[in-house]
Image (cartoon, rainbow, N blue to C red; front, side, top):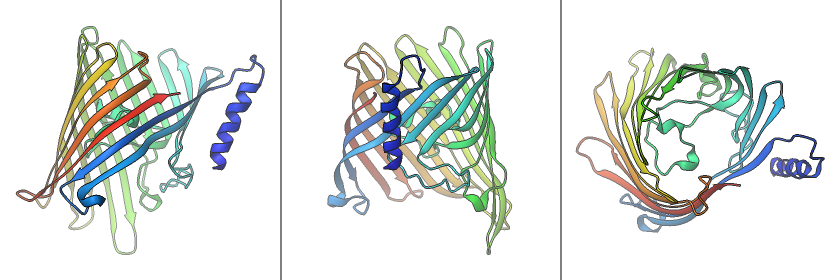
Length: 338
């Protein structure tokens, strides 16, 4: 509450001072849904496998502005999360998604210093969670404190980041590191993207000592033809440890999304299938499948304000030939930047 009051104070103060003072732009990112959930596993939901909820899955207070000397300040706070410190020891609050200074070194080269979004996971990974209706099981959102280097040359975009990893303080070894490359060809018709990141971990508790790496690889392409967009990503998440009799795990699969933008309407469909397996034992833990169909309506033509109606389905194939757990939902909502 104190944080919210402080943010409101900043907004009011910014509106009251002389116009000669240049203040950062403050905006509210908001999404609200009425959601009906269904599951064939009656233990998952109340109401005999059916639930109706009103939700605010996304609400952020965003502040961004030029602070001089070719520097930009960006802060974003998640209002539906806690101020408790991150478990990885970076001393920032969990609700603080972004807090960095963007320093332009040359017209094509800049540095981001502070808490920032990890750019990984193909085109699916570039979407804000405000735009999510379903997410593949090997997709994750990560905000970490560190340094990012962004370089553009001849239509090529290179991003190198090293951030505190997602493990808790007792498992910290060295920071996560990796790169992201993207480009465009034939008048932005072909848009490939590749990312590779390594997240080291070290576990030294009283019963076990383990060292290893988690590796995240994604290769994707966005095909743009007239008003059609087709995104396809192939993703591999792999974990390898040095513990005796340890188990290496891997999940891999593809994500495909097709959307069509015409006037004030944008329908889209998405399908993802991920296979999970424990490698050194050959244990196959099943496929995770999720898909959705959505139609979005932009009443003013502004892409930052929409209504949406979505149907989402996920299937959890826990083991080969086992019962499939099916969870689905219908969501009617509104989202915008204000």
